[in-house]
Length: 86
Image 1 (tube, one colour):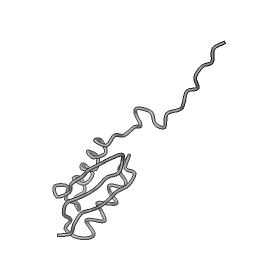
Image 2 (cartoon, rainbow, N blue to C red):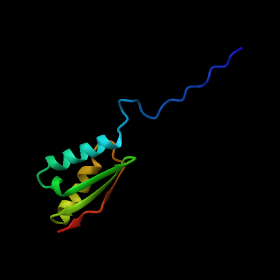
Image 3 (spheres, rainbow, N blue to C red):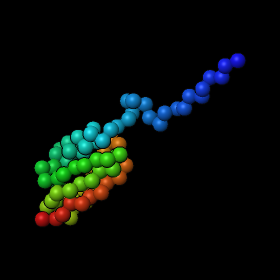
Image 4 (cartoon, one colour):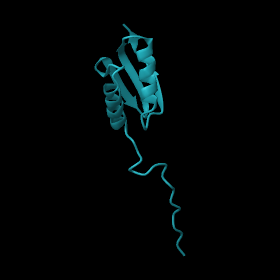
């Protein structure tokens, strides 16, 4: 008699898994596309789905908008916005 190993269902399929590099790319494109944010002045780092923003924002509204836009990117678990205001 042989016992087959139980197969665990993966959390995500290969197609659904979003890695940090692709999240960073999507965040940069999102910030570049929106005309009220300055992607050129924004530094983006992603680790395990947690995005950290750095750099300079023109004002508090731009900083807040960047946080909102990044939160809406697929695969982002959390946003740490460390941007400073000029």
